[in-house]
Length: 173
View: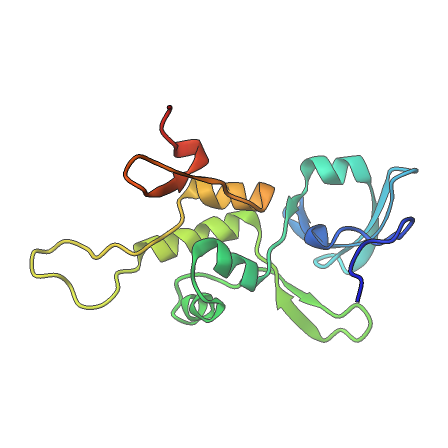
């Protein structure tokens, strides 16, 4: 099956389907670049809103599914569900079907992703060490999370010791 976007296809890119604008969750329904229009459904107001597409691209922040957030913070989605169950965080805004009204998935804002990252960084696995120090776990830095949110890619370089470090933290040669 060919997954390429056909020329003249009015549907927006899949990675920008859900977005937050003015603190409200929206679903992008239709984009007309020639007229600079973006039709979006606002979940909190339960109505369609027409925005200038240039303003949406400039001011909107992407929405992320629980699977995308799990990949960013290097945890399984079920662990993020546990954090909500344990009371460490609240669920972000939830989508619903526009035709039937059935509840859908939770969409995380950029601020929610950083909250999840902070919760993951504070988790201490297993029993405490005898010397009182914590057992570190691999957690993505805030810069890595930000790079993943904005560019969908983090570049790594190999340093002298053979370790891979993020490119923006690589040593000068």
